[in-house]
Length: 129
Image (tube, rainbow, N blue to C red; front, top):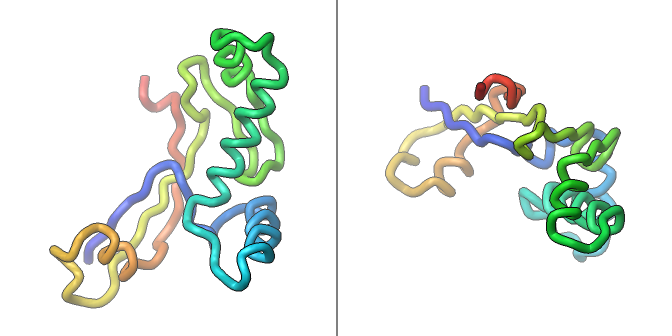
């Protein structure tokens, strides 16, 4: 068996309730097109950045300081906190299992298209120390 991992993100079907609600509303604006894989992550990042800018005094240092103070509860991606280095305190790592044959050597996109989610584990920034 061949396994692949994708750190820091969940597939759309594995998102928490806030992410699923976001995708439902977003897809309603896309005339039947499915959301790109990282649309929910882009939206949450935009919200975090705009909120940090609003709380700042307008300087880069202040925006950075406010970003590090960000704590989200029940957001698009669930709960989010950052450590003093700016790393997520916890982040998902999705483990995929490749199904079928003949997908090796065709590039990463082809391999991921022939894979299914096997499990999701949580990586903690504290493990890096």
